[in-house]
Figure (cartoon, helix red, strand yellow):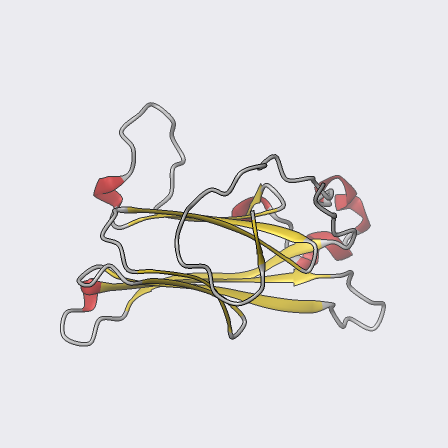
Length: 165
């Protein structure tokens, strides 16, 4: 069984950029910043974590970091990245496609080129610090969830000693 994280999780910021040296579109970078913990009466927040994905479309090199710690590395040329890992009691799932043209063609609207989920909740659905600090928005608190994943989602070259699921 996977332990849960009881603190509030909220979104702070996200961005996607093209950062190739010779051809901008040859390297995609996406980053998300989440906050964990409540908003204190003095306005200070809990801890924040930055999740960053670097993807070189030319070489196929893919890296995922949380802070400065590398949690995933791969050199394959697949057009989809699907990786999940556990960090400090939270379960992260990152799904990415090499381009918007490689998204699955189906009737489901709302598919994104880069999507991060924390404890099964999409980053876009996490509350903001303002929504957490406003008592009228208690219904927007993100409950802790137990990961539905029992088997690894990928076979690759995981780095460091983080628990992959």
